Image 1: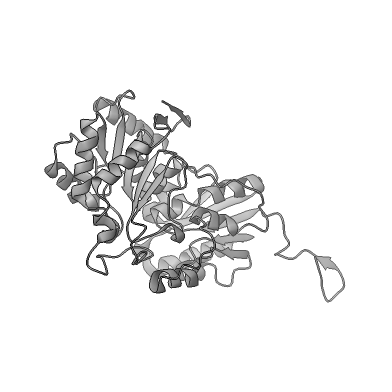
Image 2: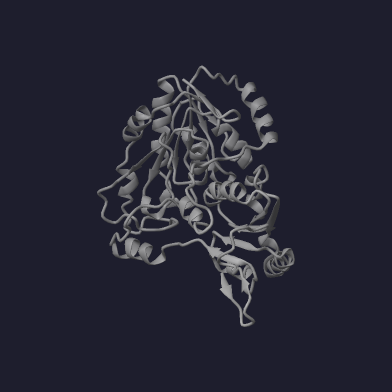
Length: 368
C-alpha cells in the first residue's frame, strides 16, 4: 500500500493481487508458443474471473485456437507490416488491460506495450549469460531453467507454488481428420509407431538425413511402423529418406497442417527429432522423445522436460553451443556435433525409453 499527497491510502499496481483483463504476447515460433501453456493454465487458475487474451503471429494462430484458457486471440499479420502493427496497438490500448505479460520481449512486443497503463512484466532472456556461454564458452548459469519456467517467473509475485507441467490442446477437427486418415493406413494400436522429424528451423540443427534413413531401416526391421513428419519446406528431406532406404515409412512431410501433425504425434509410441517445434509438441503430449541437440545446449532452455524424454548430445565438443537459434552451416566447417552421433547411438536411446506404451492423447492415458 502507498500513501498519496492527499493523505489517503491506495493500492499500487505492483501490489495488486487481482486482475480482470490480462494480455499475453508471444508472436512466434512453434516451440516458444507451446511453452506458454503452463503460464496460461496458472493465470486461469489464479485469476478465475479474468479475461485472458493472447497475441501471436497469424501463421501460428492455429496452435492456440483450441486453448481453453484464451478468450480472444489477436494476430500479427506480417503481410500488413507497420500499419497492421499500429492498428493492433490501438486495439490493445482500447481493451484497457490491467496486466500484460510480454513473454517474447522483442522490438515488436515492446512497441505494442509502449506507454501502456497496464502492469507489464517481461520474459527474462539472460542475454549476458547467453553471450558468455556462446561466444566465450564461459558457463555462468548457476542452474538450468527451462523456458516455460522462465515464462512462469513473470508472474511469480502473484502466482506461487505452481507445478510447471507442459500440456497441449489438440484441435477436434484435426483429430477427426487424422483418425480417418490413419484408419485408411490400417493404423494398429498393437504395433509400435515411431515418428521421425528430420527438419529444423536452421540447417545446422538437423541431424544428417542419411542417419534418419538408417534409423528408419533399423526400427522397421524390428517391427516398428515409421512415420515422417515436417513442414512443406522440408519435403525434400522425406523424399531423401525414402530414396536412401526401404523402411516402408509413411511420408507425411508437408502433407498435414500443424495441428494434424500434432494429432499424429499423439498416437506415436516415440519420436526421434531435432531441436524443433514438433519436439516441444510431442514433449507436451508426454510422448517419449529422443531429441538430438547439435549446436544448442540445455542451458539455453529449449529442451524436452518430460521424464519420458532423452536428450542426445556431443557433450565433449568444446565449440558447443555455437548458436542460440541455429545457423545455415557449422561455423567450424566440421559439423562433428551431429556427424559423430551415429544412427547406432540414437537406436540405443530409443531402446532405453521407458513408458513406451501407446498414448491416447484425447484421454491422457497410456497403455503398455
